[in-house]
Length: 79
Image 1: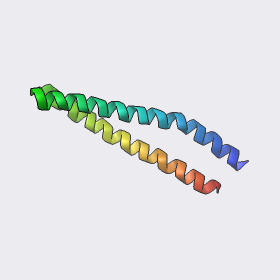
Image 2: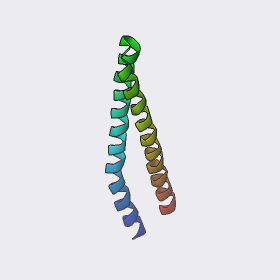
Image 3: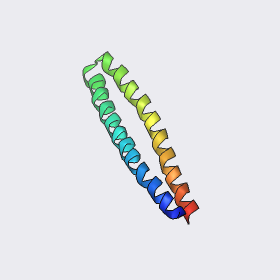
Image 4: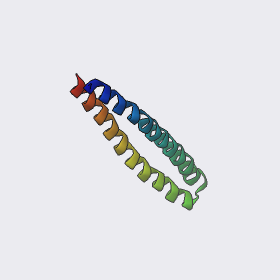
């Protein structure tokens, strides 16, 4: 049935969603560490790494928003 298909699709996305979530949390941690090194110790290379982490975070956030919207739309379609 259609509901079973949607449930299978959502289960497949759950792993992707968890991976995206974990990647977001890792990027936040990296940014925090590198920003601290830059602000507290003046390490210029850390500023570059902090900016890189923020750019990655931006991409991951967009991907996660898309995943959430797809799940929401699939649930709406199933109802």
